[in-house]
Length: 112
Figure 1 (cartoon, rainbow, N blue to C red):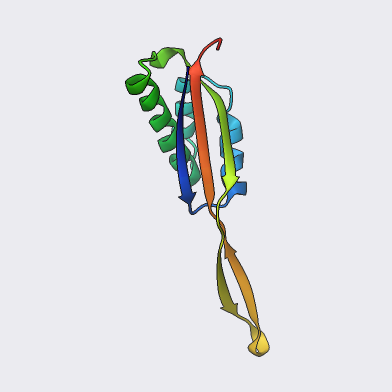
Figure 2: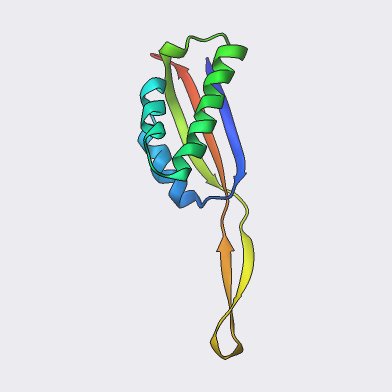
């Protein structure tokens, strides 16, 4: 059995989130939560919220034991990008791309 949590349209670049998500993939939930708690990045706090939501889904909806859970899959997809214009020298303009992400965390029991 697997429990899943998704955070959509998070206003953080997928490249930044991918670094954090790759560190917790395949680890036991307790270890992943401890790692995220002590990372200085605001991105880690957002990933921790998604992980905690997936654990809560596993406990409440599927009645799985928290101690037996492992992060089986965790990945980041690109969301829509907002485009902004920044004025530059000599009357020119540059396009600034503000990226967003969709973060998915799937937890399952060990050995499944």
